[in-house]
Image (cartoon, rainbow, N blue to C red):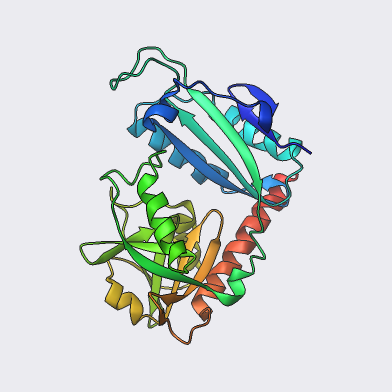
Length: 287
């Protein structure tokens, strides 16, 4: 079955979907994107997803392409049309179609594109084994808090990690870990979870936000502060979070074993608590 995608009000087979060569997302990367998980055929983490998208659009002065509830309905319609049980919906909004000028065009309708991808989120085999990461220089711009389409630095960093036999890269600036290439980075020391505080230098991860809430409810201490690569190598545990990984243990950094080289107890507990939370949300969405 051909996948159904959404382009500016139309649901189309993927081979029929097209955008203009003058779209500013294509020419300038002038737009934002979001990734929202789908569990048991239901979109989850909806409220935080909408809040972050609203903020990203506002920071770039891009208008919403439609109402927020209509936006959600597009996501849900794609899930139904593609019979997606588990995976993600990717969506992006650009400033629209205009001649190539750097300044903002006037009264240009935005472009909205969205599609689904099937993925194994809850029972990801990597959750049992953990993953390896390597450190890589952070080459990005200074507004990393905006989930923009400008991802070339992340593409280069991810390829660097993959070429060195790792599943993810941890980007480093001034000796401190900023975040994963496509995830939030955490370490655990003496029972405390440590992750970098929010600023313009990292993306405000939705899973990060939720995990902090879950940890507080479970009486797991979290400290939001900078940490170095050297500190990470001496950690008891390390892990990442993202829409596609939920929470995954990091058992190797730059070839150095973390802890006993297996997913740690706090990492596993947070993953189970997060799974329970989104399964509950998915079940409520069915009613």
